[in-house]
Amino acid sequence: MSAGWDASSQAWITEQGEEGDYGRRYVLDAPMIARLQLRPYTTALDVGCGEGRFCRMMQRYGIRTVGIDPTEALIAQARLRDPAGDYRVTRAEALNVAPCTFDLVVSYLSLIDIPDLAIAIDRMVAALRPGGTLLIANLNSFNTAGMPDGWTLDAEGEPRFCIDHYLEERAIWVGWRGIRIQNWHRPLSAYLALLLGHGLELRHFAEPAPHGGDPAKADRYRRVPYFHIMEWAKPGV
Image 1 (cartoon, rainbow, N blue to C red):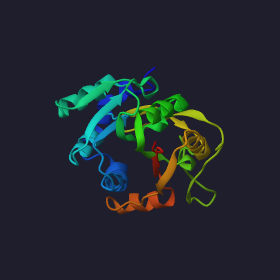
Image 2: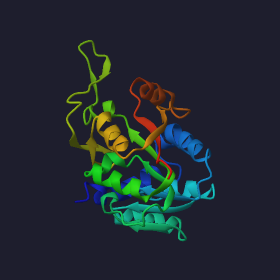
Image 3: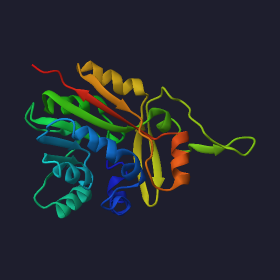
Image 4: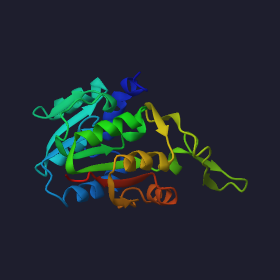
């Protein structure tokens, strides 16, 4: 099951380009890179790396990267753009690397794509060295609780973002500009319970605001922010 990614891969590659879509370019990239610069990381695993854009960004800071993704066309594109890179076709739930291999494990908007989240997080934490960092960018759960309809008009004709069934974990099909994929809504507590259950320590949490792009889009974003960033530390020995 590709959850729509096989059919959507070319549209995704076009949408992202080299600089990323609006959310990456104007909201997430800068604070994600800022977190990288706070510690001397040497090795990183990018879980759900897609076409490899963030792997290439991390390499600019001297970090050796491994990118994994289950979509063959996206990994092919990653290898095309970075022939010397290490990109592997596999799911997070099937990750097979030696324990305690990486200083840094990154999930950049990929947890929402993973059906078996508990298994995936277990594999990701196992891949981290003691003292290592799990850096996550994810969709806000109040946002996914409003999918796929989200913005509607109220009785006065004013746009409102409607959420429902917040505590109900479920798969949701979403589509835009030739992309149609399956995401997962989970309450924030579901993510936190799994991460805390592995003994991880929350080091940083942020809901970054836009820093450029179309002003109307930025205003809309500030009303209902899409994203948050979490940085978790694996306890040392």
